[in-house]
Image (cartoon, rainbow, N blue to C red; front, side, top):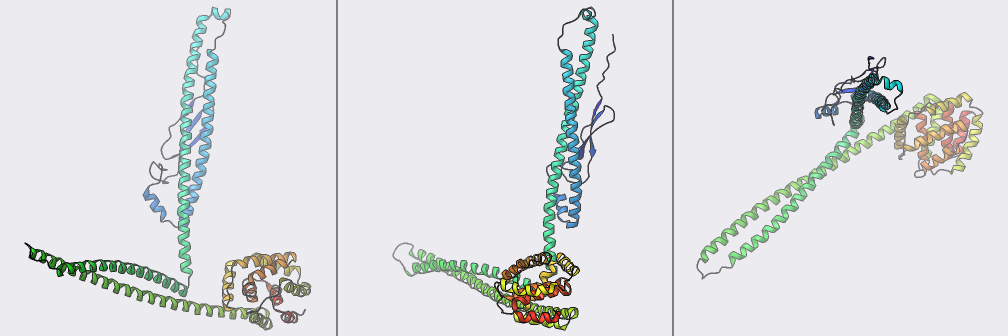
Length: 490
């Protein structure tokens, strides 16, 4: 009898260990291995390193105290683990599919081997030998099928574990993202508080104390109203008790006992009325004290706001002094005087229409273009390209304060963008339209504030400043443009 051997490839399968990443790989030769590689430690609580449905409360509590830097590092580590989990999931799926297909192939082989066929003469002659070989083949295929089925089931289990760990990592990432958002918000608020100067901080403190005082007053007022209602009720009851005592009914057995009882009730009611009246008086005193606290808090807030206003005015004056000094140092005293003149004339001035201002500027620009080289134009464009709008907005706020106007910081972005495009394309109308929109409420002073902010905050160079002052002058009048022409020699 021929020796029957099992030529099917050996398949190894290891059970998953809790807290590990599922990774499935194909071994050398024909051996297919389903294994779980050790995952990252100390990620969550509950069940193993990754935990079950949620992290332990201790872990979450500890993570909640981390800084944004720690949370971002933790987030990056989680992203790496998520990538590893996705890779493990893909491998597990591939392994599961391969083993499932292998099981199908073995089953098909067994079905073909068991199919009935007509025996030949030779088969009949060797029926005994063929029967033994057929039985051996059936047993081999049955064994191989059982082994393949177990391996396919193990691969399916590994795939489910990989999916669970992937979902757990995703949950942890969402939790970390939430904690990071809260930490960043807290740090932003702390930075905002730290950035406030003493005067701003004093105003915030005064506003908070006033709000607290008003809340206490409202509470005290409610207490007074409640006690007034009690006093009113007890006063009515006292009046009725007094009437009962005053109406003496005699001549019946025990009337003296009844009278004494009524007198005791009257005295009790008098005592109660005295008690609730004292409580009301005490509540009124507290309420009046709270009113005084509110008045004092309002005075403190006004003082804090006045100090802030004085500080801001001084700051804005210092800003403009520094601005004119900067102009003088960079471009000369005559240029500084023109800037001062523009600022003064802009106060309360109504602006020309876009068409009028643009026409005046075009005449000035046509001559100016002959003076400005491509190198100068590129330098202006590059300066506008790298504007720090945070610093620019601070300059705008200070300059606007000195001109006694308010300006919307959002216009800075529009002006900067239109200014840059005008330098590049030569089309200045969009910039003038934007400036008109910004100045519709207070006039040319806002245009001065916007454009002067660029002088302070952007290294525009001599010709860039000439363009800015030319734009402002075109809204004020020909006299200012003529002064500029004379200064620039054009």
